[in-house]
Image (cartoon, rainbow, N blue to C red; front, side, top):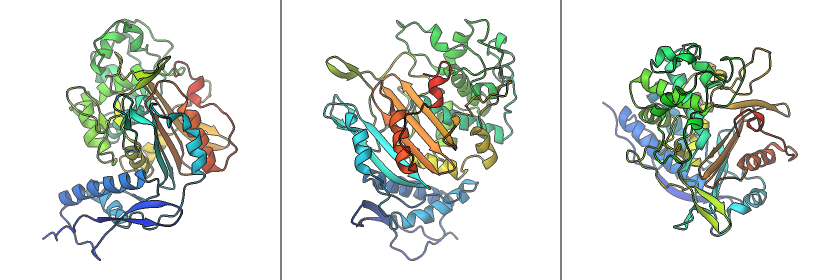
Length: 442
């Protein structure tokens, strides 16, 4: 018989003089076995609580996951035990918080859309702050739990969905897309799944066929018809790199076709939930809701005005996911622990494509990949109507910085790099991210 599940942890506050961190501590001396379903449910409740509370106060929390193995039950046992310790061992990990605050001063002014920021080092959140407003109209403050449209930061989740199907043997990276999607235009017959992932397909941008006057929003399923209006690729598939939103919209259709469920459902069940992102959502208007939603804005002469949607904002595969920095902090830990796919698949995703001339294409599967001062750097930007975002990750140094903003324009990648340099101890010098020089990426 399964023993009784211990009660949910109580929440207390511990102050170490330099940082103030809400912590989770368990009242019972031992953890008796619990039924798998109850344990999974309990884990996500406790994990969300710990992440949200610690992130909100800018403290550090203990490593959520030291190593997570599949199946799911095995994946949750270790993090449950680590979360019982919670923040009790936290010390002041925030380096120069005033310097970080100064970087985001423009987002922290009254009546201005804001930003949420998180820094992870060695599997722990060491800095988390929010600045400004999640909604200027209602004067709702931004928090680490505010959910922003991720724009192209969504691509790493689309890529993960594909990798899950590949690992299960249901799809191959070398498969021709036309063999998976019969409605894929015939002139794209040599485009393979890996071409879409690495931006080497050469397919046209679906946005080129959407008139600015169109009011009806484009969905992923509309992209194939838009692509059929072209009759050639920009270049032979695999011969060059050109950033493509179309590619990731098509990948969402591949996931649906192979899995037999909607893309949004696949992400929720197979990516977000096991990745610890319980409140993330691939948003479909009228179907799903976004919790603690941040709304997009644009700058005008009269100030910031609402600018939350465009006629392409409903496409999910290339940019339609909403998440908070709390969600993304959990995701970062899950990535490092190989929670969803094995280390070999992760390494493949973080390896840049090599072009026929031997040059690096500087893109893996859902991530830009380059070398920064001798360090491997993973990064991505996100630009969409009313939102601009950035993530930078140094896997060997186990450092990740994520910046989400709800305004059009700005350069959060510059801010993210500056924050990363503070933690790396690197002189802060302007240097470009790879997307800034990739065709069609900016």
